[in-house]
Amino acid sequence: EWSVDVSEAAVKARAKDLPDDLKRALVIEGEDEDGEGGSNAYDALGSWILSTAGEKGGVDELEDVEIYLKAKELGIEAKHRTLTVLAQTIFDENIVKQISPRASMLKKMITSERHEKAFLGGTERFVGKEKPKLIPQVSAILLQYYQNDLISEDVLKGWGSKASKKYVDISTSKE
Image (cartoon, rainbow, N blue to C red; front, side, top):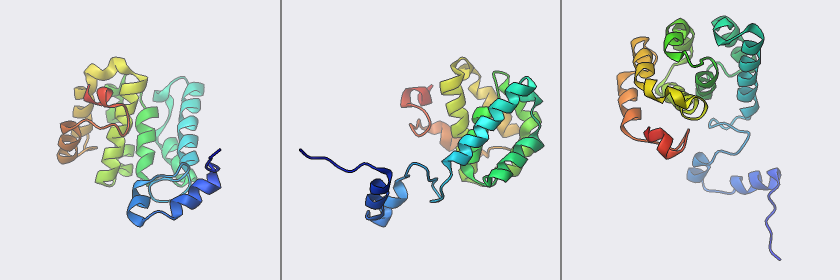
């Protein structure tokens, strides 16, 4: 009988023995791309937004300041993965109308091309997995992102030119 120790400690130990170029490509569960622990912080932010919005009667009732302060409290307000979480939680089926009111907070948090791509990926996951009825509105959503200076033209063209399976399955990405 042959088996491999798949405990968390053993997996991390084996990952440390990999060459540096493979380490960069590998994301160990519980660590983000920057090598810091904290997927739980992103989960906590998403759960907090959804539960607080539920208590207040909808995502529109949740103030931008509250969201930003919660992200800051968790220490993830400057991380690009935070934008993936926000794209999935601060909007509902009225996303096209909700972008402009949220634009000032999002502009403060989107500080690089990596942030822009993470935000688009979160939007892709939100529309593709949670609200597939919104797929016909993707062009209107992207137009709002562009008009509110959340996403640059270059990033938008690059993102739209090829399907990716990073956030959703490839067929959903193509849609």
